[in-house]
Image 1: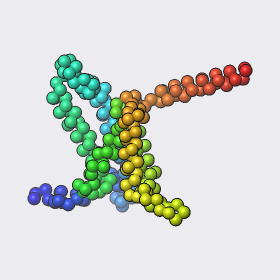
Image 2 (image 1 turned 90 degrees about the vertical axis):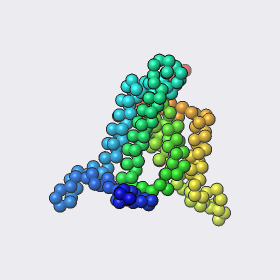
Image 3 (image 1 turned 180 degrees about the vertical axis):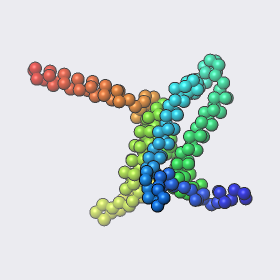
Image 4 (image 1 turned 135 degrees about the vertical axis):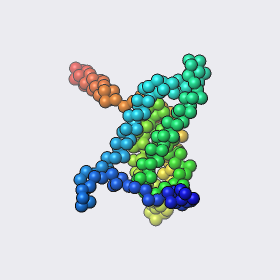
Length: 224
């Protein structure tokens, strides 16, 4: 009962501040510095930086060893129970940050918002980006969000020449994403990035190799 005013009982949690509360205003209420647009990106960048530093630390290498082979990791002196508890706590910490950003974005939180479909969405993002890549997960999140919005037309009724196609109805885009997830798991389980990280040097190196091949092919055709 003491937390009733905070949690709003069994109903949704309301009265959550918005991102506009982070704007810096003057005495008259005019916005001097608009931080509402950049605040979620700053938090996301900070979390990604912490995760990258954690992965490159001794704890991160221990987590990787446990992921690859628990028996070998334990033989090397890694405490499995302690590191698994630590990984669970770290994952819960970043999940809490994501939940806080979601609450500020929606200004209200209802348990009905967290359905089983949300679990599949998160799984699809991770698998799509690459199970061993941080930047791949970020890219997968952008690709998934953009694709979900682009396929929104699939949830609307569609008729051709006056004949309504029954397959186009609410929830079709989630069916499409489910099929996409199965295809990725079966045929392209490395995802977009696999275990690699995004690198401008890697991209420029690839483009340079392609350019050399194309230039060599053009010169060869010109000589012939």
